[in-house]
View 1: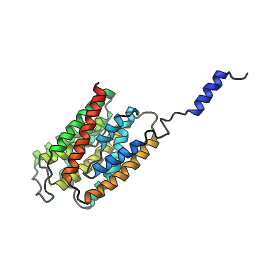
View 2: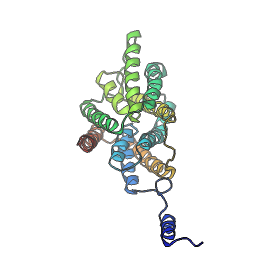
View 3: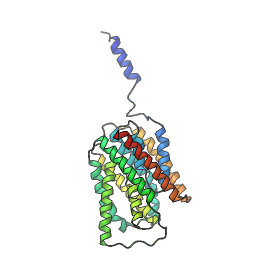
View 4: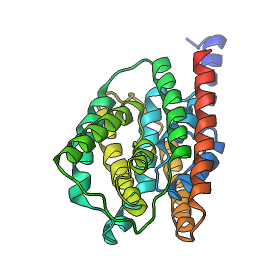
Amino acid sequence: MLPSASKLKCQSHTVRHPSPDHTDMQHWELLLFFFFIAFIYASVGFGGGSSYLAILALYALPFKELRLIALLCNIVVVTGGTILFVKNNHVNWRKIMPLVLASVPMAFLGATLRIEQRTFFILLGCSLLLAAVLLWTSKKHPQTAAPVATDKNTYIKDGVLGGGIGFLSGMLGIGGGIFLSPLLNLIRWDNSRKIAATASVFILVNSISGIAGQLLQLPPAINYTRILLLCAAVFAGGQLGSRMAIMKFNPLMIRRMTAVLIFVAGIEVLYKHLG
């Protein structure tokens, strides 16, 4: 028996319009946005995870895929900077251990939480506004400032700080450097170069831990094409941004420009999801 005309029409429609969600790259302008974000953030020693999420929140992309994209892009951007910091002995491993050891398990725990989409975006928007204020008000200390003396109480405080930021980072899908670096500057934790190195390591380990936590609840189908293209865009932007930082751009100007971008992104996210 020959198939009916309606069945043929349905089959033809299926062949002509395969689902683009798993194999095709939609919204090509995202590549430009991610390149620009990586360029700006890399110039101040961050990964850009919070702003990647803010941009992705404005698109109708799979919710559970957003945090994975942001964390992978974080890793791509900060890995090179972390290696350079380590090679140049700017990482004080003994001093940053309380921050890192407390943050990694908490980031994993935060990433395993199952939160509603609307709740997630409201938390993200509020976090972006807080990060913008911290960035704007933080002051950069001299590169040659004497290291701050540490004791047992300092290590405990660092552990609490690292654990709290790590948990929030894992829950939101960011590295946490956008919160850590301004806070360390505010409390005069160390000189600016050591703080930048610490933030870079912090972002890297928390992003890896966050991805590990997300493996428990990844969506069944992931658009790997989109992820690879976005990672390539942030790699290019991050490499260029790191080199611009070496050319001694005005760090205060860059930080405040970043703060403005984050603030606007936070307002956009809250406006969209509180309405």
